[in-house]
Length: 128
Image (cartoon, rainbow, N blue to C red; front, side):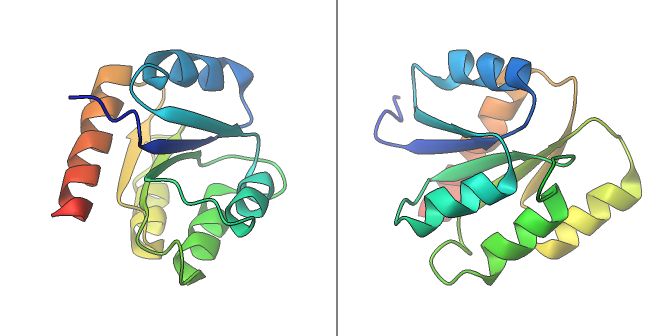
């Protein structure tokens, strides 16, 4: 099953992570990459709506928690599936993100296949 018409927004300041995700998801999704939360918000405010967002916890300019707050405060994007990636396996970070409205939290290094399945499950739940 192809998701080719689905748009995946990746927000991460680590080029290596962006390249891995672009490469892995590029066959199935239209992948849009932004380096930080502010760039991502600007893109969203231009009228773009992704089907799912994968965002890093630690970013310059606007970090993961601030980005989640912005997304969830937006009437247009508050229902978009949002997965946070983090280099820290910290329960408090996880709880912060989930409380703010992230749908999932994955610790780096992660298996792209696991992330892919989590995105698919998220998209499936949102569509139902």
